Image 1 (cartoon, one colour):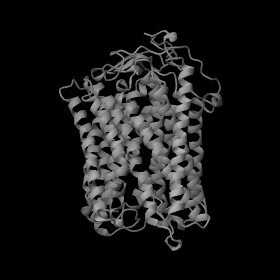
Image 2: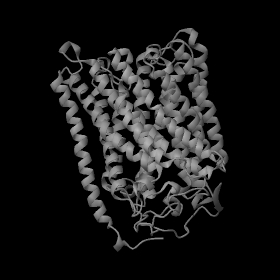
Image 3: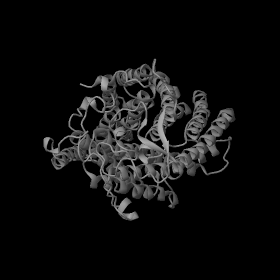
Length: 44
Length: 548
């Protein structure tokens, strides 16, 4: 059974939101990487 | 019991099912596989890659077990033996188990949540295709003058810094694997959070999807930590820095802290998706809903959280304040609570169920029993005072191999047998599947159980030679290893037969107890599925009794 697409978010809207989620996660990953390098630099 | 029918191999007619759409597969080999953005194709690529890496890593394990068959140096030089132990671990962890789980995630998550594909299909292609280059680079170091990495997969300095120029290749390969893993994880999270079909609330998701969501967060949190650690090793080795060089004011123990801050969650990255697969399989073949769905979700999240605060149990022998030892000891023991919840719930799901024992169920039960043995030896290792005795012995080798081989790898096999008919549209040979299970289960215990005794008797790990008192158990272990290695050829045979030769067609609902959106599609599912979101109701979710 399927539902009418007009009642739902379109796939493209979902993908736009997914891209925003992806950017947030990518920035978090990059910050963790930089933080650990910096902790080494500042600690030594 | 499976639902099947006999028909010609050219399976071109599938029952109409929700979300079915005409296939528009790309034509041509390169178009199909090199440039694909389809989650099913990329899932297949990951799984094939992982299988190849299993055999490469397994070949290295055979070299190790052949050398250890008898005391004395028989086959390889000690330095090459060290390269084998190091590369075996790197290949199995980063090349086999992790990519295999990403393959499962690619194939199953969109099908299980009613999404048309992964959220970021082009990045999906990229995250797979950098892996073969990463591993080509890693394996190429074995043919270089300075040889491959030989300091163990933990890459502890100062030993790891005494390698030659090939070390740069190792670090770059690890960076590429990390980038691949992070991209894959971002895709999984973005897909699960944004692409679910309407009505598929978080607490209606199948357990496999939940465990992968939590795993993906773990990966994003810890892979950059590993990347940072190996980058500092790289600059220490080639650019004269002293992050971990005591002579220059650095601290080699700091590397161990950073490595294990990555390394312990990494263990759960490999095992949490296994928990998810087993939580899908057991209810299907027990014909009962999963006992304690919500408790399973929260137990998974608890394990993930605890995995961040136990890292120093890998370093009790380094020396740390008593309060530190006590903290890491008790925090480690605490993990037994949510893990125990899971084992209890799996057993309770089977309790009074109408169980049948097809190959996926056999592997799932094998997982529950044998993984628990690995968990119990882990509790022994958590005790700081006795870990001083066990540390760096074969007891540790036995422990983590019980967790990873009859643990993670058995769950991978269980999942493969469970969803192979869905993926291919054909039933595999149940007889050969069961033969594979029994030979693997018996041999894996012959392989790893004696290693507990070797460790308790004091045999150190990562050595090519040993005292004659350890000879008998090593010979038994090696025989088990050879049988286990050979028995995996049965696995390949079953898969190849299923894909190319099997004449038994699988229906959409492959297993009569199966619940969940993936079973509403034909087998194999159409190339593009769920372009129109499916309607979610209690008949189409995996764990309906707990749905809100």
